[in-house]
Length: 278
Image 1 (tube, rainbow, N blue to C red):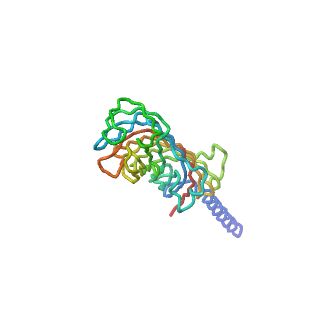
Image 2 (cartoon, rainbow, N blue to C red):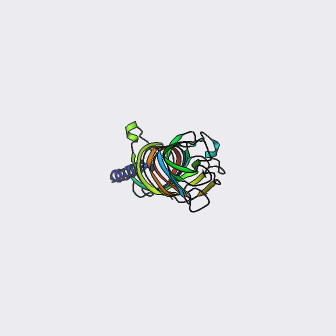
Image 3 (tube, rainbow, N blue to C red):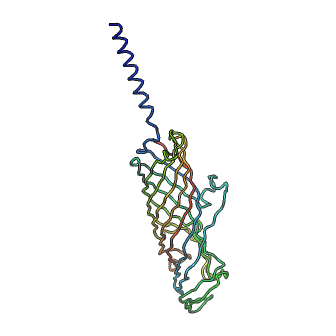
């Protein structure tokens, strides 16, 4: 009788230990559903050429195949200085996993778009004013003359967007058994949003104008790789490309003056972030 009793005690102890071990195997990183995440990073940007139309009371002309570039700040303390974090080219994102593999996020891509000043581009249209008066018919213009035009979205080319993304754990490809220490994920996503640039413009000798204005919309797609460390912290690299269409860009203090353009862009992004449950 004592032997049977001891046997059942040991059996119960073994089953309990086994159950605890099974529970212990379930890692924090095994499931994403219900988690939140937030990230902050920087970007470099490239843009395709763009036909930019400028129109107002006394003029309507188009600059053909305008070239532009970004305005990087390099490795700078401003990326983490709370007083100056919005000055460099930055990316903010906050999101939620509604399943283990899919998330939805809102974000702000703070790019910078600077018209290349030392370029010659063809201009077509009419200008009736005190400077650069005349009819242009695919006429080459050297824009080193800043009285004709300076044109920048430098504070910045703000793409405020929503993204839906897929996430896949590929840690096993690299033989990483404990994903709670190091986890590697692939991520892909699609996004859409509005453009809210602060456009810095000097046009035909008019007073410089620099103000925020909702100017159009954007569409984007991305792919990236995510390294999560100790369950809660991650480093993520992304390539993100898309299309921007802005048909209502403010260029002067007068609401009669505006510009329009569309182009494709490519971002290279590095961000740091955190993932957690509330």
